[in-house]
Amino acid sequence: MLVTSKELFKQARENGYAIPAPNFIDVESMKVYVEVAEELGLPVLIALAESHLNLISLEEAALNGKRLAEQASVPVILHLDHGMTPSIIKRAIDLGFSSVMIDASQDSFEVNVEKTKEIVAYAHPKGVVVEAEIGHVGSGVNYENHEQTDSKYTTVEDAVNFIKATNVDSLAISIGTAHGMYKGTPEINFDRLKEISAIVKTPLVLHGGSSSGDDNLNRCASEGISKINIFSDLVNAAMDEIKRTEPTNYLDVKLAANEGMRKCLTHYFSVFQTAKYLD
Image 1 (cartoon, one colour):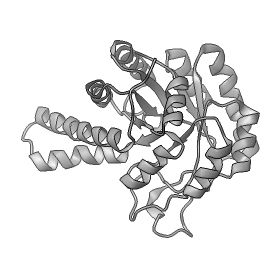
Image 2 (cartoon, one colour):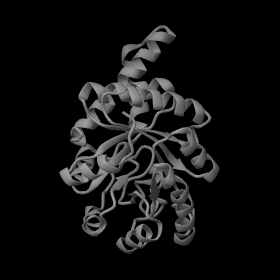
Image 3 (cartoon, helix red, strand yellow):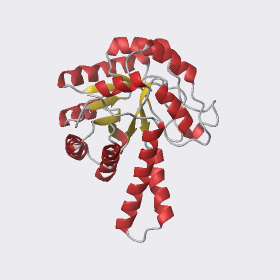
């Protein structure tokens, strides 16, 4: 069933688990994610990043995503991830995405607020939820040198003020993860997570989950994070399976890639301790 994140994130927060948010880049990966969720009987958020619109159009993603979600036996959120362009975010809303993210985290706090308010005002009357980000989840390429990373930690004060100003439905916070792959194991600021989750009742979400370490992610899920994004680990798992099986034709390449992603996502459902949605 196609749903928004409201009740799913609420239950995740109350029961100490997180919902996986795998990024899809085509209809094939989208189908794999929904199939895994159905096999496990668990909810999932399938996400398309604006940066991947060169691989699949919004129209194609909406058409296939809605069909898969509506036919699924488990709750499925169809989400536009890291939306940077207001016109694209609004187009996704009009096409039937049930959730969108406005990512203005690299702008000033004031500009981030104004951009988020614009999207919230457009989305909420249409029954669509909005995610935003404060702090900044940077790149993992410089993680081994903390002086070079472009990540900026979220402060408690900014989180409280941002939510009050925007009425956003979920908030992505920066506590030490980064997009892409790390050259080491990240140091998650669990003290900051504890401080924010103790005060902020709006669901908190985490970007940059790939290669963050199972123990770290398990702890994030149990200590206040309701949704965790995964992408790099999925495509790497696809390549690993291709290398392992050494397919000799294109069809077998596709099957191997799907199997790699399937195994990876199944693993993260376990790490996040995702539980069934209770009506």
